[in-house]
Amino acid sequence: MEYPKNTFPGGVWPVMLTPFTEDNEIDEAGLRRLVDWYIENGVTGLFAACQSSEIFNLTFEECKRIISITIEQTGGRVPVVASGIAADGLKEQAEEINQVWELGVDAVILLTNRLASKKESDEKWLENYYKLEKLIGPEIKLGVYECPQPYKRLLSVKVLKEISKTNRFYFLKDTCCTASVIREKLESIKGTNLKLYNANATTVLQSLRDGAAGYSGVMANFHPELWVWLTKKENFESKKAEEVQEVLMAASLIERQLYPANAKYHLQAVENLPITTRCRNQDYTLLYETWKEEVHMLDSLCTRTYEQYCK
Image 1 (cartoon, rainbow, N blue to C red):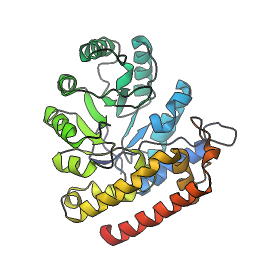
Image 2 (image 1 turned 90 degrees about the horizontal axis):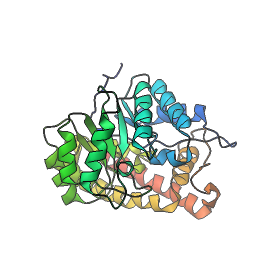
Image 3 (image 1 turned 60 degrees about the vertical axis):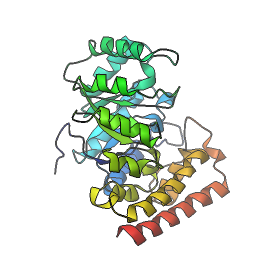
Image 4 (image 1 turned 180 degrees about the vertical axis):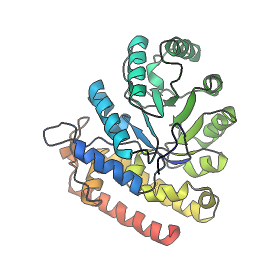
């Protein structure tokens, strides 16, 4: 059944990986299989061309190709949001936003660190946003991602209140990693189109109970089925959810190992997806045997947890 256009359901939105061939080109067949794998595991949406996709090591044309393949492969089964907006200048960003929207995404995601430098104020960020808004199509739905690269710019409550009033924003990928701050952000966007998707495994359960729409983080590339279970209201309000949360928190430490190479290894060696572990943003050959064994142990732990608590 085709998914309704421009809806933003709660649940799990993986930050998608980019499979590469041995020649370091985009592996289109591998990407299509990856899209199917996400959907088979019950995710409710996909975030394409994000930091996990290695967009800072892709050309804009490659980003657009990834987004197009993703949308085509979903066949309307789930909504797709996408970024790929890595330009510095407002005019260049606007051109990229317009082009990404034309591909058929449900929202174009702005990187928060692109609209102001690290030293510039919230007022400057908002000033630049309103300049940008005049350069893009009025029908374009937007989102924001507190992307850690090249620097992490967290949106203040003041900024969130301001942009949510425009009724153009639908998706916030939050990376502040602090439950109390997330609670304030949720209060500031209550009653608007903007929904918050937490990227942090430690705070996700509390944020769901406080009203977050779901999870959009790197660990959905390892065991999305656990995240899908946790983000359902009948589950995250239960006592079992706290024990599942503890496992998910511990599992998330593998992100500090050699991500995204280790996630690609998981997909290849555990999930049997036909992709390589090649990356453009790091030396994937540094994933040595002990780290690979940790990936397998993590899978065993998460599989047991799912069978024990979630079936």
